[in-house]
Amino acid sequence: QVQLVESGGGLVQAGGSLRLSCAASGRTFSRYNTGWYRQAPGKEREFVAAITWSGGRTYADSVKGRFTISRDNAKNTVYLQMNSLNTEDTDIYYCNAGGKADTTTPGPYWGQGTQVTVSS
Image (tube, rainbow, N blue to C red; front, side, top):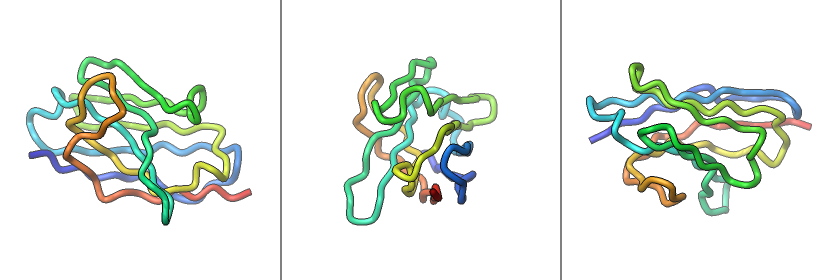
């Protein structure tokens, strides 16, 4: 079992930056592929970025060049650095773990989500 807790969301102006964190429990977290997804009210949850246990990264086209996913296995934490934010990035962001490597398909473990709001 893995429990995930996101933090770092908030309100930011367009063009600004935020860094999301996902703290995980479980001694085997370092062996899990992890990712970030986002969802707006009334819409399906969509893939944002993923990082494998060995550090391989995948990004959605909409965030390439602006977002960076990273992990610190010693701290059982995954990060999402978000730069050049725009209003279309406004969503609830969810951390995920346990997905297959090099895919956008999520695994079975989800955090509770953190709200990101970008104002114009």
